[in-house]
Image (tube, rainbow, N blue to C red; front, side):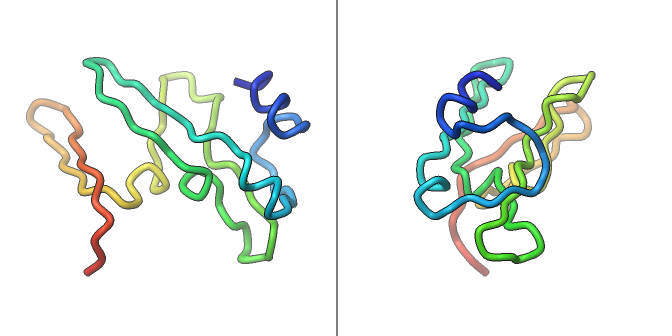
Length: 101
């Protein structure tokens, strides 16, 4: 991941606030997560990059690679999705959902 990020952006990967021009932001990769059982989710840069402090051009990646127990799904994962938590069977279900209201 870090090598691919560096090839695309010319930067080291991290979770620090950084400036990205419009052109730099537009070439950030779409991330693809494949879960056990074959479920797949794609995240556009606008879903995994956070416009830090609402400052124009400053973004922070919200993909954290240091989680020892596996993936940590945050609010960015749930954006534009209808999500169901099955607490009995300890499962998570979702459907892409771009409807407002």
